[in-house]
Image 1 (tube, rainbow, N blue to C red):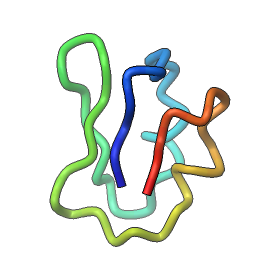
Image 2 (spheres, rainbow, N blue to C red):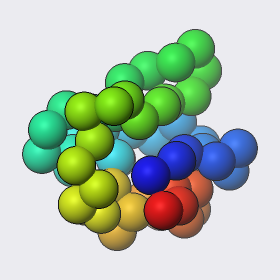
Image 3 (cartoon, helix red, strand yellow):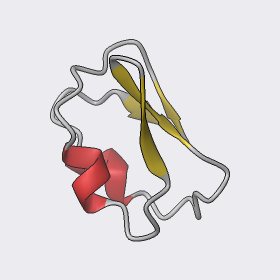
Image 4 (cartoon, rainbow, N blue to C red):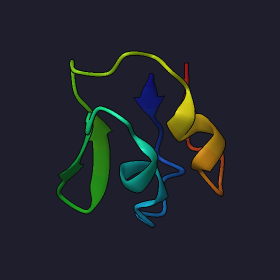
Length: 52
C-alpha cells in the first residue's frame, strides 16, 4: 500500500488501520512495513489517496 500526494492529512486511515501501520510523516502520512495489506485504509480514505 502507498499513500499518494492526493493525501489531505485527515487521519481517517490512521484510525482505521488495525495494526497501527500508518504514521505521521511531516504534513502527510506514510504506511510502515508493519502493513498487512488488509485494505481497510483504502476504503476509509475520502480522497482515494491510498493505492495498492
